[in-house]
Image (cartoon, rainbow, N blue to C red; front, side, top):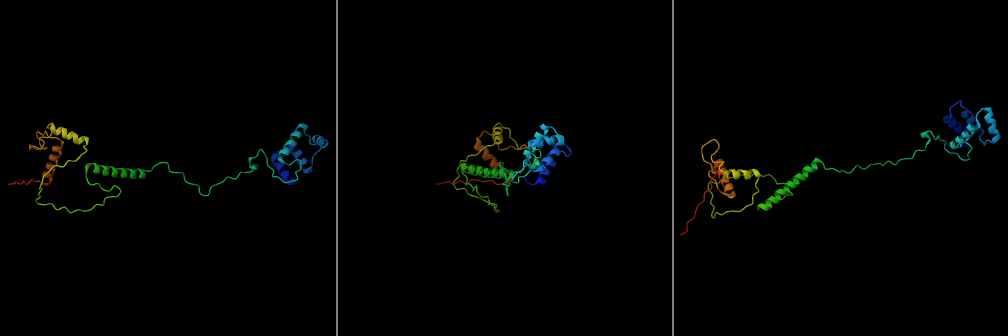
Length: 229
């Protein structure tokens, strides 16, 4: 670098002021030329400084780029000082992409649970023979006015077969009824419909339905028989 002031500033940073290397380096840089061997011996006697130390000093000045004089200007830096190293620019994206979502949220799980529940009800309706509702649409609640008829007529009584899924608790009630556990109504001596009950599962459900609607709603359905001449 041809700028002597910049070279001297580099010497000020690299060497301790007042040391022999500092004085020798300042002299060499000010000359702004190559120093011959005879002049190097004179420097050793004038400062004074050892020849081996002076040789190391020339080597250090070459590394710093301040000796010998350069035709083109180059940036001066110290190898020991990290601030002198050129900084590599880092590319910073303007709009960093957000990380992909790898886990399902609680809301997603609840939606999945609701969809599975609708599908299960739909399949159960198909299996049992009942008219299925559309699992993809929410059923709208409608207020239905129920008018209880005074009498009803069934022309041809018949039996209808349906498939019923039993809970373990319902099966236990059926088994205990056959064992005579439910003979009387609770808190009274009135005999219940399961006194000496030995029927099958179909009888069990029909008795429960009749007893429930008669005792709670006084709704008893009678059969009107026809006689043919």
